[in-house]
Length: 90
Image 1 (cartoon, rainbow, N blue to C red):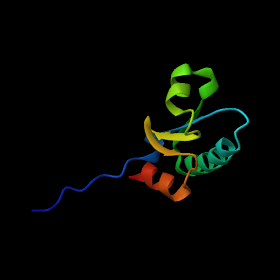
Image 2: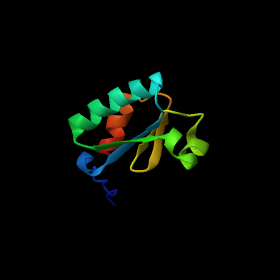
Image 3: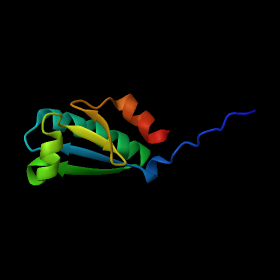
């Protein structure tokens, strides 16, 4: 019996969300990595500000920056470029 092969997802169909706040140096570092990776792979990128969303603030205030891939938490505090690339292409 042959194992089922997983098809790699098209990065252009994926979205990375950065949850952060203004004047956050870790958020700025995370943004640089995310912009570079999503730009190279063609994935979508959006940002959410916890100071403008009470629910996000309650959920993530101790973890920012938080990175989501397709709405699911991927990383927090720092973004590992290799790990993000892998998440977007598998």
